[in-house]
Image (cartoon, rainbow, N blue to C red; front, side, top):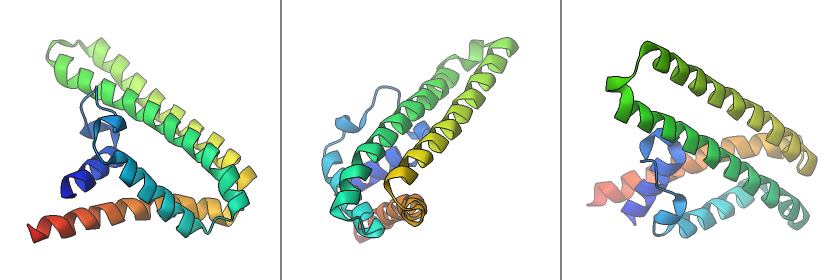
Length: 151
């Protein structure tokens, strides 16, 4: 179980922590963590059945878009680690521009999904969602540490 929690923490915390070809489906127990996250967010947001019906499709699209952006970041980082010895200043400049562009698109995506979420949930619940996502990550890290300290 501790490996499962560590994998979830690493995958959810950022794009730079995994190699290029991994996906969520590669990790055993990913569905259990996803189900925990669904239950956690549902509880934290106090979603009514109607809200849940409207919220989850939007949130799942957001998660898919985030994953694509994280994949782009991972791919760019992998390229840096494998090719940087032979790269020119112009290539580094191009990579820097691409990295900044990815972050810009990530911000634009979050703005777009913020607007979509505000159409299906009250503003208080949208803000609660943002903090609940971080709270869930903290929970996963605490669980990992707790289980790791037992061993």
